[in-house]
Image 1 (spheres, one colour):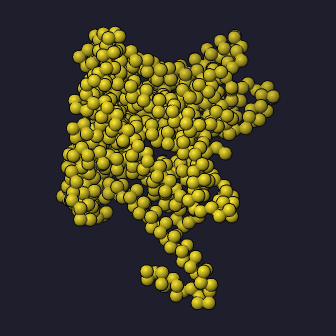
Image 2 (cartoon, each protein chain N blue to C red):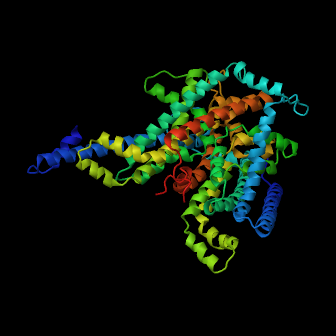
Image 3 (spheres, each protein chain N blue to C red):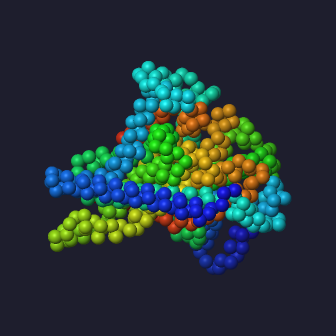
Length: 298
Length: 341
Protein backbone atom coordinates (compact mmCIF):
# COMPACT_ATOMS: atom_id res chain seq x y z
CA UNK A 1 0.00 0.00 0.00
CA UNK A 2 2.75 2.46 0.94
CA UNK A 3 4.50 1.53 -2.27
CA UNK A 4 1.49 2.56 -4.34
CA UNK A 5 1.06 5.83 -2.48
CA UNK A 6 4.63 6.83 -3.01
CA UNK A 7 4.16 6.05 -6.70
CA UNK A 8 1.27 8.50 -6.80
CA UNK A 9 3.17 11.32 -5.16
CA UNK A 10 6.07 11.07 -7.56
CA UNK A 11 3.80 11.43 -10.57
CA UNK A 12 3.33 15.00 -11.78
CA UNK A 13 0.11 16.48 -10.42
CA UNK A 14 -0.70 18.04 -13.76
CA UNK A 15 -0.51 14.68 -15.60
CA UNK A 16 -3.57 12.97 -17.01
CA UNK A 17 -5.18 10.86 -14.26
CA UNK A 18 -5.92 8.03 -16.73
CA UNK A 19 -2.28 7.88 -17.66
CA UNK A 20 -1.12 7.49 -14.07
CA UNK A 21 -3.74 4.82 -13.43
CA UNK A 22 -2.72 2.64 -16.39
CA UNK A 23 0.89 3.16 -15.50
CA UNK A 24 0.28 2.14 -11.93
CA UNK A 25 -1.60 -0.91 -13.13
CA UNK A 26 1.24 -1.90 -15.44
CA UNK A 27 3.76 -1.50 -12.65
CA UNK A 28 1.67 -3.60 -10.32
CA UNK A 29 1.29 -6.28 -12.96
CA UNK A 30 4.99 -6.37 -13.69
CA UNK A 31 5.81 -6.49 -9.97
CA UNK A 32 3.46 -9.41 -9.38
CA UNK A 33 4.88 -11.30 -12.36
CA UNK A 34 8.38 -10.89 -10.96
CA UNK A 35 7.17 -11.98 -7.55
CA UNK A 36 5.57 -15.16 -8.90
CA UNK A 37 8.67 -15.96 -10.96
CA UNK A 38 10.96 -15.42 -7.98
CA UNK A 39 8.87 -17.79 -5.87
CA UNK A 40 8.94 -20.36 -8.69
CA UNK A 41 12.72 -20.01 -8.98
CA UNK A 42 13.15 -20.56 -5.25
CA UNK A 43 11.06 -23.75 -5.45
CA UNK A 44 13.08 -24.91 -8.46
CA UNK A 45 16.50 -24.25 -6.96
CA UNK A 46 16.05 -24.70 -3.22
CA UNK A 47 16.34 -28.51 -3.08
CA UNK A 48 19.68 -28.35 -4.84
CA UNK A 49 20.90 -25.55 -2.59
CA UNK A 50 19.99 -27.81 0.32
CA UNK A 51 22.21 -30.53 -1.14
CA UNK A 52 25.08 -28.04 -1.41
CA UNK A 53 24.44 -26.89 2.14
CA UNK A 54 24.39 -30.41 3.57
CA UNK A 55 27.60 -31.26 1.73
CA UNK A 56 29.28 -28.47 3.73
CA UNK A 57 28.06 -29.66 7.12
CA UNK A 58 30.70 -30.78 9.58
CA UNK A 59 30.30 -34.34 10.88
CA UNK A 60 29.02 -33.30 14.30
CA UNK A 61 26.01 -31.41 12.96
CA UNK A 62 25.21 -33.71 10.03
CA UNK A 63 21.80 -34.50 11.46
CA UNK A 64 20.52 -31.10 12.37
CA UNK A 65 17.14 -29.54 11.83
CA UNK A 66 18.61 -26.22 10.79
CA UNK A 67 17.51 -24.78 7.46
CA UNK A 68 20.44 -22.35 7.20
CA UNK A 69 21.95 -22.53 3.72
CA UNK A 70 25.49 -22.00 4.98
CA UNK A 71 25.82 -24.37 7.93
CA UNK A 72 27.65 -23.47 11.11
CA UNK A 73 31.28 -24.49 10.88
CA UNK A 74 31.05 -25.13 7.13
CA UNK A 75 33.83 -27.41 5.94
CA UNK A 76 34.99 -29.31 2.87
CA UNK A 77 35.68 -32.47 4.93
CA UNK A 78 32.95 -34.41 3.14
CA UNK A 79 34.57 -33.71 -0.23
CA UNK A 80 37.92 -34.81 1.09
CA UNK A 81 36.51 -38.08 2.47
CA UNK A 82 34.59 -38.67 -0.74
CA UNK A 83 37.58 -38.29 -3.03
CA UNK A 84 40.24 -39.98 -0.92
CA UNK A 85 38.39 -42.61 1.13
CA UNK A 86 35.51 -43.72 -1.10
CA UNK A 87 35.21 -45.44 -4.48
CA UNK A 88 33.99 -42.18 -5.99
CA UNK A 89 36.75 -41.80 -8.60
CA UNK A 90 36.36 -45.36 -9.80
CA UNK A 91 32.59 -44.95 -10.22
CA UNK A 92 33.14 -41.81 -12.28
CA UNK A 93 35.76 -43.54 -14.39
CA UNK A 94 33.45 -46.50 -15.07
CA UNK A 95 30.59 -44.20 -16.02
CA UNK A 96 32.85 -42.12 -18.20
CA UNK A 97 34.31 -44.84 -20.38
CA UNK A 98 31.01 -46.69 -20.74
CA UNK A 99 29.27 -43.46 -21.78
CA UNK A 100 31.95 -42.36 -24.24
CA UNK A 101 32.02 -45.74 -25.95
CA UNK A 102 28.22 -45.73 -26.13
CA UNK A 103 28.29 -42.34 -27.84
CA UNK A 104 30.87 -43.43 -30.42
CA UNK A 105 28.99 -46.59 -31.37
CA UNK A 106 25.62 -44.85 -31.36
CA UNK A 107 26.80 -42.06 -33.66
CA UNK A 108 28.50 -44.50 -35.99
CA UNK A 109 25.16 -46.23 -36.54
CA UNK A 110 22.92 -43.16 -36.55
CA UNK A 111 24.85 -40.70 -38.73
CA UNK A 112 24.57 -42.62 -41.98
CA UNK A 113 21.09 -44.03 -41.34
CA UNK A 114 19.69 -40.55 -40.69
CA UNK A 115 21.19 -39.36 -43.98
CA UNK A 116 19.37 -42.10 -45.86
CA UNK A 117 16.10 -41.16 -44.14
CA UNK A 118 16.66 -37.52 -45.05
CA UNK A 119 17.64 -37.82 -48.73
CA UNK A 120 16.00 -40.93 -50.20
CA UNK A 121 12.27 -41.56 -50.57
CA UNK A 122 12.61 -45.33 -50.44
CA UNK A 123 9.71 -47.68 -49.74
CA UNK A 124 9.39 -48.32 -46.01
CA UNK A 125 10.89 -44.95 -45.09
CA UNK A 126 7.82 -43.72 -43.28
CA UNK A 127 7.26 -47.04 -41.54
CA UNK A 128 10.88 -47.02 -40.48
CA UNK A 129 10.56 -43.61 -38.87
CA UNK A 130 7.37 -44.64 -37.07
CA UNK A 131 9.07 -47.82 -35.91
CA UNK A 132 11.90 -45.77 -34.43
CA UNK A 133 9.32 -43.75 -32.52
CA UNK A 134 7.63 -46.91 -31.28
CA UNK A 135 10.86 -48.21 -29.80
CA UNK A 136 10.85 -45.18 -27.51
CA UNK A 137 7.59 -46.43 -26.09
CA UNK A 138 8.82 -49.78 -24.82
CA UNK A 139 8.37 -49.86 -21.05
CA UNK A 140 11.72 -49.73 -19.29
CA UNK A 141 12.43 -53.20 -18.06
CA UNK A 142 10.72 -54.86 -21.00
CA UNK A 143 13.92 -55.50 -22.96
CA UNK A 144 15.94 -55.61 -19.78
CA UNK A 145 15.20 -59.29 -19.09
CA UNK A 146 16.04 -60.59 -22.59
CA UNK A 147 19.17 -58.41 -22.80
CA UNK A 148 20.19 -59.53 -19.31
CA UNK A 149 19.82 -63.18 -20.35
CA UNK A 150 21.78 -62.50 -23.56
CA UNK A 151 24.59 -60.83 -21.63
CA UNK A 152 24.74 -63.61 -19.04
CA UNK A 153 24.89 -66.27 -21.75
CA UNK A 154 27.68 -64.42 -23.55
CA UNK A 155 29.63 -64.24 -20.26
CA UNK A 156 29.59 -60.45 -20.41
CA UNK A 157 28.00 -59.98 -17.00
CA UNK A 158 29.89 -57.40 -14.88
CA UNK A 159 31.95 -56.15 -17.84
CA UNK A 160 32.28 -52.86 -19.67
CA UNK A 161 31.59 -54.67 -22.93
CA UNK A 162 28.25 -55.96 -21.68
CA UNK A 163 27.21 -52.53 -20.44
CA UNK A 164 28.24 -50.77 -23.65
CA UNK A 165 26.44 -53.30 -25.83
CA UNK A 166 23.31 -52.96 -23.72
CA UNK A 167 23.44 -49.15 -23.92
CA UNK A 168 24.67 -48.67 -27.47
CA UNK A 169 21.45 -48.93 -29.45
CA UNK A 170 19.26 -47.24 -26.83
CA UNK A 171 19.69 -43.71 -28.09
CA UNK A 172 20.11 -44.56 -31.78
CA UNK A 173 16.41 -43.99 -32.65
CA UNK A 174 16.42 -40.54 -31.07
CA UNK A 175 19.75 -39.66 -32.71
CA UNK A 176 18.40 -40.69 -36.12
CA UNK A 177 15.39 -38.40 -35.69
CA UNK A 178 17.52 -35.52 -34.53
CA UNK A 179 20.11 -35.90 -37.28
CA UNK A 180 17.48 -36.40 -39.97
CA UNK A 181 15.89 -33.12 -38.93
CA UNK A 182 19.24 -31.41 -39.25
CA UNK A 183 20.20 -32.96 -42.61
CA UNK A 184 16.80 -31.80 -43.89
CA UNK A 185 17.89 -28.22 -43.34
CA UNK A 186 21.09 -28.60 -45.38
CA UNK A 187 20.27 -27.53 -48.97
CA UNK A 188 20.39 -30.39 -51.47
CA UNK A 189 21.92 -28.06 -54.06
CA UNK A 190 25.29 -28.43 -52.32
CA UNK A 191 25.38 -32.15 -53.00
CA UNK A 192 23.84 -31.86 -56.43
CA UNK A 193 26.58 -29.48 -57.50
CA UNK A 194 29.20 -31.97 -56.33
CA UNK A 195 27.43 -34.82 -58.10
CA UNK A 196 27.36 -32.86 -61.35
CA UNK A 197 31.11 -32.49 -61.01
CA UNK A 198 31.27 -36.27 -60.96
CA UNK A 199 31.82 -36.89 -57.25
CA UNK A 200 30.65 -40.14 -55.71
CA UNK A 201 27.51 -39.71 -53.52
CA UNK A 202 29.22 -41.35 -50.56
CA UNK A 203 32.25 -39.12 -50.80
CA UNK A 204 29.92 -36.14 -51.05
CA UNK A 205 28.29 -37.27 -47.82
CA UNK A 206 31.56 -37.63 -45.93
CA UNK A 207 33.21 -34.53 -47.39
CA UNK A 208 30.32 -32.04 -47.56
CA UNK A 209 27.31 -33.09 -45.51
CA UNK A 210 28.94 -34.62 -42.46
CA UNK A 211 31.18 -31.62 -41.67
CA UNK A 212 28.19 -29.30 -42.05
CA UNK A 213 26.21 -31.47 -39.65
CA UNK A 214 28.90 -31.27 -36.96
CA UNK A 215 26.70 -29.26 -34.53
CA UNK A 216 23.89 -31.81 -34.80
CA UNK A 217 26.35 -34.68 -34.33
CA UNK A 218 27.63 -32.94 -31.21
CA UNK A 219 24.14 -32.57 -29.80
CA UNK A 220 23.14 -36.15 -30.62
CA UNK A 221 26.39 -37.29 -29.04
CA UNK A 222 25.81 -35.17 -25.97
CA UNK A 223 22.30 -36.54 -25.62
CA UNK A 224 23.36 -40.17 -25.78
CA UNK A 225 26.21 -39.40 -23.42
CA UNK A 226 23.80 -37.96 -20.87
CA UNK A 227 21.42 -40.91 -21.26
CA UNK A 228 24.18 -43.42 -20.60
CA UNK A 229 25.82 -41.29 -17.92
CA UNK A 230 22.60 -40.98 -15.90
CA UNK A 231 21.25 -44.49 -16.48
CA UNK A 232 20.36 -46.49 -13.41
CA UNK A 233 18.10 -49.50 -14.01
CA UNK A 234 20.15 -51.36 -16.60
CA UNK A 235 23.33 -50.79 -14.60
CA UNK A 236 21.69 -52.15 -11.49
CA UNK A 237 20.92 -55.42 -13.23
CA UNK A 238 24.13 -55.75 -15.23
CA UNK A 239 26.70 -54.82 -12.59
CA UNK A 240 27.06 -56.52 -9.23
CA UNK A 241 30.77 -56.12 -8.56
CA UNK A 242 31.51 -52.96 -6.60
CA UNK A 243 34.59 -52.24 -8.71
CA UNK A 244 32.39 -52.07 -11.83
CA UNK A 245 29.73 -49.75 -10.39
CA UNK A 246 28.76 -46.67 -12.33
CA UNK A 247 28.13 -43.60 -10.21
CA UNK A 248 24.31 -43.98 -9.90
CA UNK A 249 24.81 -47.38 -8.25
CA UNK A 250 27.53 -46.08 -5.99
CA UNK A 251 25.44 -43.07 -5.01
CA UNK A 252 22.52 -45.23 -4.07
CA UNK A 253 24.78 -47.22 -1.82
CA UNK A 254 25.99 -44.00 -0.16
CA UNK A 255 22.42 -42.77 0.28
CA UNK A 256 21.42 -46.06 1.92
CA UNK A 257 23.70 -45.13 4.82
CA UNK A 258 21.75 -41.90 5.11
CA UNK A 259 22.30 -41.20 8.78
CA UNK A 260 26.07 -41.53 8.61
CA UNK A 261 26.89 -40.53 5.04
CA UNK A 262 24.37 -37.88 4.13
CA UNK A 263 27.10 -35.25 3.87
CA UNK A 264 29.29 -37.45 1.69
CA UNK A 265 26.36 -38.37 -0.54
CA UNK A 266 25.57 -34.67 -0.91
CA UNK A 267 29.15 -33.79 -1.75
CA UNK A 268 29.15 -36.50 -4.43
CA UNK A 269 25.87 -35.15 -5.81
CA UNK A 270 27.26 -31.64 -6.07
CA UNK A 271 30.38 -32.79 -7.89
CA UNK A 272 28.42 -34.80 -10.46
CA UNK A 273 25.43 -32.50 -10.84
CA UNK A 274 27.24 -29.23 -11.51
CA UNK A 275 29.07 -30.23 -14.72
CA UNK A 276 25.99 -32.09 -15.97
CA UNK A 277 23.80 -29.06 -15.30
CA UNK A 278 26.18 -26.71 -17.09
CA UNK A 279 26.35 -29.00 -20.11
CA UNK A 280 22.60 -29.32 -20.09
CA UNK A 281 21.90 -25.61 -19.84
CA UNK A 282 24.32 -25.01 -22.68
CA UNK A 283 22.72 -27.59 -24.97
CA UNK A 284 19.05 -27.58 -23.97
CA UNK A 285 17.98 -25.32 -26.84
CA UNK A 286 18.97 -27.93 -29.43
CA UNK A 287 17.76 -30.88 -27.43
CA UNK A 288 14.26 -29.48 -27.36
CA UNK A 289 14.01 -28.94 -31.08
CA UNK A 290 15.03 -32.59 -31.44
CA UNK A 291 12.55 -33.74 -28.80
CA UNK A 292 9.57 -32.11 -30.46
CA UNK A 293 10.50 -33.98 -33.62
CA UNK A 294 10.72 -31.10 -36.00
CA UNK A 295 7.60 -29.51 -34.55
CA UNK A 296 9.52 -26.28 -34.10
CA UNK A 297 10.40 -26.15 -37.77
CA UNK A 298 8.71 -23.26 -39.51
CA UNK B 1 37.95 -48.65 -0.78
CA UNK B 2 39.14 -49.26 -4.34
CA UNK B 3 41.66 -46.72 -5.57
CA UNK B 4 41.54 -45.77 -9.23
CA UNK B 5 44.99 -46.96 -10.24
CA UNK B 6 46.84 -46.58 -13.50
CA UNK B 7 46.44 -50.33 -14.12
CA UNK B 8 42.67 -50.22 -13.82
CA UNK B 9 42.51 -47.31 -16.22
CA UNK B 10 44.71 -48.93 -18.84
CA UNK B 11 42.84 -52.21 -18.59
CA UNK B 12 39.46 -50.54 -18.91
CA UNK B 13 40.55 -48.35 -21.77
CA UNK B 14 42.00 -51.21 -23.77
CA UNK B 15 38.82 -53.26 -23.33
CA UNK B 16 36.65 -50.36 -24.48
CA UNK B 17 38.89 -49.30 -27.38
CA UNK B 18 38.96 -52.89 -28.64
CA UNK B 19 35.18 -53.07 -28.53
CA UNK B 20 34.69 -49.78 -30.40
CA UNK B 21 37.22 -50.79 -33.06
CA UNK B 22 35.52 -54.16 -33.41
CA UNK B 23 32.15 -52.53 -33.94
CA UNK B 24 33.64 -50.06 -36.43
CA UNK B 25 35.22 -52.90 -38.38
CA UNK B 26 31.94 -54.81 -38.50
CA UNK B 27 30.17 -51.67 -39.72
CA UNK B 28 32.71 -51.11 -42.48
CA UNK B 29 32.55 -54.75 -43.61
CA UNK B 30 28.74 -54.62 -43.66
CA UNK B 31 28.73 -51.43 -45.70
CA UNK B 32 31.33 -52.72 -48.11
CA UNK B 33 29.39 -55.94 -48.67
CA UNK B 34 26.17 -54.01 -49.15
CA UNK B 35 27.93 -51.68 -51.58
CA UNK B 36 29.28 -54.52 -53.68
CA UNK B 37 26.08 -56.54 -53.71
CA UNK B 38 23.32 -53.91 -53.80
CA UNK B 39 25.00 -51.04 -55.64
CA UNK B 40 27.51 -52.60 -57.99
CA UNK B 41 25.95 -55.98 -58.67
CA UNK B 42 22.16 -55.69 -58.37
CA UNK B 43 22.09 -51.93 -59.14
CA UNK B 44 18.87 -51.41 -57.14
CA UNK B 45 17.24 -48.01 -57.23
CA UNK B 46 17.57 -47.23 -53.53
CA UNK B 47 20.64 -49.34 -52.96
CA UNK B 48 22.65 -46.53 -51.41
CA UNK B 49 19.92 -45.71 -48.93
CA UNK B 50 19.69 -49.32 -47.76
CA UNK B 51 23.43 -49.55 -47.53
CA UNK B 52 23.53 -46.47 -45.29
CA UNK B 53 20.78 -47.80 -43.05
CA UNK B 54 22.15 -51.33 -42.80
CA UNK B 55 24.44 -50.90 -39.75
CA UNK B 56 21.71 -49.21 -37.72
CA UNK B 57 19.26 -51.85 -38.87
CA UNK B 58 21.55 -54.66 -37.71
CA UNK B 59 22.07 -52.92 -34.38
CA UNK B 60 18.35 -52.42 -33.87
CA UNK B 61 17.69 -56.01 -34.91
CA UNK B 62 20.18 -57.43 -32.41
CA UNK B 63 19.34 -55.18 -29.47
CA UNK B 64 15.69 -54.28 -29.94
CA UNK B 65 13.93 -56.68 -32.32
CA UNK B 66 15.59 -59.87 -31.17
CA UNK B 67 15.12 -59.13 -27.45
CA UNK B 68 11.54 -58.16 -28.19
CA UNK B 69 10.94 -61.50 -29.92
CA UNK B 70 12.83 -63.34 -27.21
CA UNK B 71 10.62 -61.62 -24.66
CA UNK B 72 7.51 -63.01 -26.37
CA UNK B 73 9.14 -66.44 -26.36
CA UNK B 74 9.87 -66.09 -22.64
CA UNK B 75 6.25 -65.15 -22.03
CA UNK B 76 5.39 -68.68 -23.18
CA UNK B 77 7.83 -70.28 -20.75
CA UNK B 78 7.98 -71.12 -17.09
CA UNK B 79 11.42 -69.62 -16.67
CA UNK B 80 12.39 -68.44 -13.19
CA UNK B 81 15.53 -68.27 -11.12
CA UNK B 82 15.25 -71.98 -10.33
CA UNK B 83 14.53 -72.82 -13.93
CA UNK B 84 17.07 -70.51 -15.55
CA UNK B 85 18.70 -73.14 -17.79
CA UNK B 86 16.10 -75.92 -17.92
CA UNK B 87 12.84 -74.20 -18.56
CA UNK B 88 9.99 -75.44 -20.73
CA UNK B 89 8.07 -73.57 -23.34
CA UNK B 90 4.50 -74.17 -24.33
CA UNK B 91 1.17 -72.58 -25.08
CA UNK B 92 -0.18 -73.61 -21.69
CA UNK B 93 2.58 -71.67 -19.93
CA UNK B 94 1.86 -68.63 -22.07
CA UNK B 95 -1.85 -68.70 -21.27
CA UNK B 96 -1.06 -69.38 -17.63
CA UNK B 97 1.32 -66.41 -17.44
CA UNK B 98 -1.14 -64.14 -19.17
CA UNK B 99 -3.99 -65.17 -16.86
CA UNK B 100 -1.73 -64.80 -13.84
CA UNK B 101 -1.19 -61.16 -14.74
CA UNK B 102 -4.86 -60.49 -14.08
CA UNK B 103 -5.50 -63.26 -11.57
CA UNK B 104 -2.84 -63.18 -8.89
CA UNK B 105 -1.05 -60.29 -7.17
CA UNK B 106 1.80 -59.07 -9.33
CA UNK B 107 4.14 -59.02 -6.35
CA UNK B 108 2.66 -59.99 -2.98
CA UNK B 109 -0.33 -57.76 -2.36
CA UNK B 110 -1.29 -55.46 -5.18
CA UNK B 111 -3.20 -56.75 -8.20
CA UNK B 112 -2.86 -55.66 -11.79
CA UNK B 113 -6.02 -53.57 -11.66
CA UNK B 114 -4.92 -51.65 -8.60
CA UNK B 115 -1.56 -51.02 -10.22
CA UNK B 116 -3.20 -49.95 -13.45
CA UNK B 117 -5.46 -47.51 -11.64
CA UNK B 118 -2.56 -46.12 -9.67
CA UNK B 119 -0.44 -45.73 -12.80
CA UNK B 120 -3.33 -43.96 -14.48
CA UNK B 121 -3.70 -41.57 -11.54
CA UNK B 122 0.05 -41.05 -11.38
CA UNK B 123 0.24 -40.22 -15.09
CA UNK B 124 -2.81 -37.95 -15.21
CA UNK B 125 -1.94 -35.96 -12.08
CA UNK B 126 1.65 -35.48 -13.17
CA UNK B 127 1.00 -34.54 -16.78
CA UNK B 128 -1.83 -32.16 -15.87
CA UNK B 129 0.42 -30.35 -13.40
CA UNK B 130 3.35 -30.40 -15.82
CA UNK B 131 1.30 -28.83 -18.61
CA UNK B 132 -0.53 -26.30 -16.43
CA UNK B 133 2.61 -25.31 -14.55
CA UNK B 134 4.67 -25.18 -17.74
CA UNK B 135 2.02 -23.17 -19.57
CA UNK B 136 1.67 -20.74 -16.67
CA UNK B 137 5.40 -20.09 -16.36
CA UNK B 138 5.89 -19.93 -20.13
CA UNK B 139 3.18 -17.28 -20.46
CA UNK B 140 4.75 -15.27 -17.66
CA UNK B 141 8.15 -15.50 -19.33
CA UNK B 142 6.92 -14.76 -22.84
CA UNK B 143 7.20 -10.97 -22.66
CA UNK B 144 10.00 -8.46 -22.73
CA UNK B 145 11.19 -8.17 -19.13
CA UNK B 146 14.26 -7.69 -17.03
CA UNK B 147 16.06 -10.81 -15.81
CA UNK B 148 14.25 -13.14 -18.23
CA UNK B 149 17.36 -15.18 -19.03
CA UNK B 150 18.12 -15.63 -15.33
CA UNK B 151 14.59 -16.77 -14.51
CA UNK B 152 14.61 -19.19 -17.43
CA UNK B 153 17.95 -20.67 -16.39
CA UNK B 154 16.97 -21.10 -12.74
CA UNK B 155 13.59 -22.59 -13.61
CA UNK B 156 15.24 -25.26 -15.78
CA UNK B 157 17.42 -26.51 -12.90
CA UNK B 158 15.14 -29.45 -11.88
CA UNK B 159 15.34 -30.81 -15.42
CA UNK B 160 19.09 -30.27 -15.62
CA UNK B 161 19.95 -32.18 -12.44
CA UNK B 162 20.58 -35.88 -13.06
CA UNK B 163 17.34 -37.63 -12.15
CA UNK B 164 19.05 -40.20 -9.95
CA UNK B 165 20.59 -37.44 -7.83
CA UNK B 166 17.34 -35.50 -7.60
CA UNK B 167 15.39 -38.58 -6.56
CA UNK B 168 17.93 -39.69 -3.94
CA UNK B 169 18.24 -36.16 -2.54
CA UNK B 170 14.46 -35.80 -2.28
CA UNK B 171 14.32 -39.13 -0.49
CA UNK B 172 16.58 -37.67 2.19
CA UNK B 173 14.41 -34.57 2.39
CA UNK B 174 11.28 -36.60 3.09
CA UNK B 175 12.92 -38.04 6.20
CA UNK B 176 10.54 -37.60 9.15
CA UNK B 177 12.96 -35.78 11.41
CA UNK B 178 15.76 -34.27 9.32
CA UNK B 179 14.19 -33.63 5.91
CA UNK B 180 13.46 -30.01 5.06
CA UNK B 181 9.86 -30.75 4.06
CA UNK B 182 8.79 -31.63 7.60
CA UNK B 183 11.00 -28.98 9.17
CA UNK B 184 9.33 -26.39 6.96
CA UNK B 185 5.86 -27.72 7.73
CA UNK B 186 6.52 -27.43 11.45
CA UNK B 187 7.89 -23.90 11.11
CA UNK B 188 4.66 -22.98 9.32
CA UNK B 189 2.64 -24.46 12.18
CA UNK B 190 1.58 -27.74 10.56
CA UNK B 191 2.18 -31.23 11.84
CA UNK B 192 4.99 -33.36 10.51
CA UNK B 193 3.91 -36.00 8.02
CA UNK B 194 4.97 -39.66 8.00
CA UNK B 195 6.05 -39.45 4.36
CA UNK B 196 7.72 -42.81 4.09
CA UNK B 197 5.57 -45.05 6.26
CA UNK B 198 2.07 -44.10 5.13
CA UNK B 199 1.21 -45.30 1.59
CA UNK B 200 -0.96 -42.28 0.86
CA UNK B 201 1.66 -39.73 1.89
CA UNK B 202 4.39 -41.71 0.16
CA UNK B 203 2.38 -41.43 -3.04
CA UNK B 204 1.96 -37.69 -2.47
CA UNK B 205 5.71 -37.44 -1.95
CA UNK B 206 6.64 -39.15 -5.24
CA UNK B 207 4.05 -37.07 -7.08
CA UNK B 208 5.54 -33.87 -5.64
CA UNK B 209 9.02 -34.94 -6.69
CA UNK B 210 7.93 -35.81 -10.19
CA UNK B 211 5.90 -32.64 -10.70
CA UNK B 212 8.94 -30.66 -9.59
CA UNK B 213 11.07 -32.59 -12.07
CA UNK B 214 8.70 -32.37 -15.03
CA UNK B 215 7.52 -28.76 -15.21
CA UNK B 216 10.70 -27.32 -16.79
CA UNK B 217 10.47 -29.52 -19.88
CA UNK B 218 6.92 -28.38 -20.58
CA UNK B 219 7.79 -24.77 -19.79
CA UNK B 220 10.70 -24.66 -22.21
CA UNK B 221 8.80 -26.49 -24.95
CA UNK B 222 5.73 -24.28 -24.62
CA UNK B 223 7.86 -21.14 -24.45
CA UNK B 224 9.43 -22.15 -27.76
CA UNK B 225 5.95 -22.54 -29.19
CA UNK B 226 4.74 -19.20 -27.86
CA UNK B 227 7.70 -17.40 -29.35
CA UNK B 228 6.92 -18.78 -32.79
CA UNK B 229 3.42 -17.23 -32.76
CA UNK B 230 3.44 -13.97 -34.71
CA UNK B 231 2.39 -10.94 -32.62
CA UNK B 232 0.29 -9.79 -35.62
CA UNK B 233 -2.47 -12.19 -34.58
CA UNK B 234 -2.75 -10.56 -31.17
CA UNK B 235 -2.66 -7.06 -32.66
CA UNK B 236 -5.51 -7.96 -34.99
CA UNK B 237 -7.49 -9.55 -32.16
CA UNK B 238 -7.05 -6.49 -29.97
CA UNK B 239 -8.33 -4.25 -32.75
CA UNK B 240 -11.39 -6.50 -32.93
CA UNK B 241 -11.80 -6.11 -29.17
CA UNK B 242 -10.97 -9.69 -28.09
CA UNK B 243 -10.44 -10.16 -24.35
CA UNK B 244 -7.30 -11.68 -22.88
CA UNK B 245 -9.03 -15.04 -22.36
CA UNK B 246 -10.46 -15.01 -25.88
CA UNK B 247 -7.01 -14.36 -27.31
CA UNK B 248 -5.62 -17.25 -25.29
CA UNK B 249 -8.47 -19.58 -26.24
CA UNK B 250 -8.67 -18.79 -29.95
CA UNK B 251 -5.09 -17.80 -30.86
CA UNK B 252 -2.60 -19.18 -28.37
CA UNK B 253 -4.05 -22.65 -27.77
CA UNK B 254 -4.73 -23.60 -31.43
CA UNK B 255 -1.34 -22.32 -32.60
CA UNK B 256 0.37 -24.08 -29.71
CA UNK B 257 -1.23 -27.40 -30.63
CA UNK B 258 1.48 -28.66 -33.02
CA UNK B 259 3.99 -28.37 -30.19
CA UNK B 260 1.73 -29.32 -27.32
CA UNK B 261 0.62 -32.60 -28.91
CA UNK B 262 4.02 -34.28 -29.22
CA UNK B 263 5.06 -32.79 -25.88
CA UNK B 264 2.03 -34.29 -24.13
CA UNK B 265 2.53 -37.67 -25.79
CA UNK B 266 6.16 -37.68 -24.69
CA UNK B 267 5.14 -36.50 -21.24
CA UNK B 268 2.57 -39.27 -20.85
CA UNK B 269 4.99 -41.95 -22.03
CA UNK B 270 7.80 -40.68 -19.83
CA UNK B 271 5.58 -40.44 -16.76
CA UNK B 272 3.89 -43.78 -17.34
CA UNK B 273 7.34 -45.34 -17.77
CA UNK B 274 9.02 -43.44 -14.96
CA UNK B 275 10.95 -46.00 -13.01
CA UNK B 276 13.69 -43.96 -11.37
CA UNK B 277 11.61 -41.54 -9.33
CA UNK B 278 9.39 -44.11 -7.67
CA UNK B 279 12.00 -46.81 -7.31
CA UNK B 280 14.63 -44.51 -5.83
CA UNK B 281 12.37 -42.39 -3.59
CA UNK B 282 10.06 -45.00 -2.08
CA UNK B 283 11.14 -48.28 -3.66
CA UNK B 284 7.45 -48.81 -4.40
CA UNK B 285 6.71 -49.06 -0.70
CA UNK B 286 5.45 -48.93 1.94
CA UNK B 287 3.51 -52.16 1.44
CA UNK B 288 3.66 -51.80 -2.35
CA UNK B 289 1.62 -48.65 -1.85
CA UNK B 290 3.45 -46.56 -4.45
CA UNK B 291 4.30 -49.20 -7.04
CA UNK B 292 3.20 -48.44 -10.57
CA UNK B 293 3.19 -50.87 -13.49
CA UNK B 294 6.82 -50.43 -14.51
CA UNK B 295 8.27 -50.63 -10.99
CA UNK B 296 6.25 -53.75 -10.25
CA UNK B 297 7.47 -55.22 -13.54
CA UNK B 298 11.07 -54.66 -12.52
CA UNK B 299 10.45 -56.10 -9.07
CA UNK B 300 8.56 -59.15 -10.38
CA UNK B 301 11.49 -59.97 -12.64
CA UNK B 302 14.56 -58.94 -10.69
CA UNK B 303 13.43 -59.23 -7.09
CA UNK B 304 10.93 -62.11 -7.34
CA UNK B 305 12.71 -63.79 -10.28
CA UNK B 306 9.48 -64.64 -12.11
CA UNK B 307 10.93 -64.39 -15.62
CA UNK B 308 8.17 -66.02 -17.67
CA UNK B 309 5.47 -64.14 -15.84
CA UNK B 310 7.41 -60.87 -16.11
CA UNK B 311 7.78 -61.25 -19.87
CA UNK B 312 4.02 -61.73 -20.27
CA UNK B 313 3.36 -58.83 -17.93
CA UNK B 314 5.66 -56.52 -19.92
CA UNK B 315 3.76 -57.34 -23.12
CA UNK B 316 0.47 -56.36 -21.48
CA UNK B 317 1.96 -53.04 -20.33
CA UNK B 318 3.41 -52.36 -23.77
CA UNK B 319 0.04 -53.00 -25.43
CA UNK B 320 -1.64 -50.43 -23.18
CA UNK B 321 0.93 -47.78 -24.11
CA UNK B 322 0.68 -48.62 -27.79
CA UNK B 323 -3.11 -48.38 -27.86
CA UNK B 324 -3.02 -45.10 -25.98
CA UNK B 325 -0.52 -43.55 -28.38
CA UNK B 326 -2.40 -44.74 -31.45
CA UNK B 327 -5.67 -43.28 -30.21
CA UNK B 328 -4.05 -40.03 -29.23
CA UNK B 329 -2.25 -39.69 -32.56
CA UNK B 330 -5.46 -40.41 -34.46
CA UNK B 331 -7.45 -37.83 -32.51
CA UNK B 332 -4.90 -35.06 -32.51
CA UNK B 333 -3.54 -35.45 -36.02
CA UNK B 334 -0.17 -36.21 -34.48
CA UNK B 335 3.09 -35.61 -36.21
CA UNK B 336 1.80 -34.02 -39.39
CA UNK B 337 4.64 -32.32 -41.15
CA UNK B 338 7.33 -34.53 -39.69
CA UNK B 339 7.32 -36.76 -42.78
CA UNK B 340 7.70 -34.06 -45.38
CA UNK B 341 10.96 -32.43 -46.31
